[in-house]
Length: 260
Image 1 (cartoon, rainbow, N blue to C red):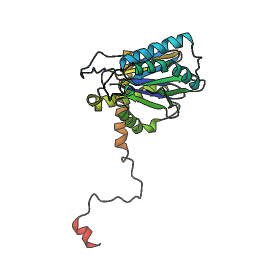
Image 2 (cartoon, one colour):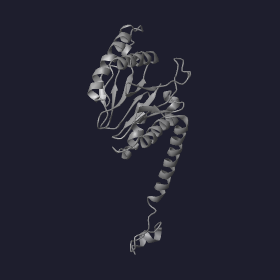
Image 3 (cartoon, rainbow, N blue to C red):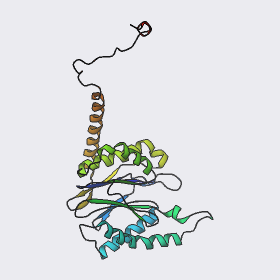
């Protein structure tokens, strides 16, 4: 199972995922890289690993042969990516052998999450198991994988942090918090887990956040959580307004019955 999230703003983009792979017998396999970059784009894939590898290889060949311009218009990227992905999906679905009620699209199909940049901002889209694109740039967030619903809920709880001016360092905190919370709460039920993998945009493209930098992001998340805990205590802890009427802690039976 897989969980991948992406955040984009005018100034940056990040993508994060779990690293756990669950075998057909429900045992955990070796950690897998679920995010990669090529052709000036950042990709994440949720679905059958064999099909993922075929799509990744096809994308790398196509973008090496016919590179996309950088900055990259989202519509241009969609048209080229669909042309590249379609034959891989068609061949996999046509060659699928399963039971009488098995649907090859359901059994094999996955989702491709893509981040790119045009001249004005970073954009975000998903190409689904039917090779159909959906754009999520305006929302600034999207997620794919087995626990996608949970991460959508988590993102909505952080909806007040949606600002177009967030830099990658801020987006890293949002992405790490969303993925780590999903793993902590639903990891065993949805088969997600392992160390969080995190990628971020740079001036030259995209890079994986290394171990030392990732440790700093985890430390930043701890600081953020502490600030939130402290701010909660301050909500009703403001100074009393002069002349305001203070209610008693409780009204006794005699007070309430006397009418005085």
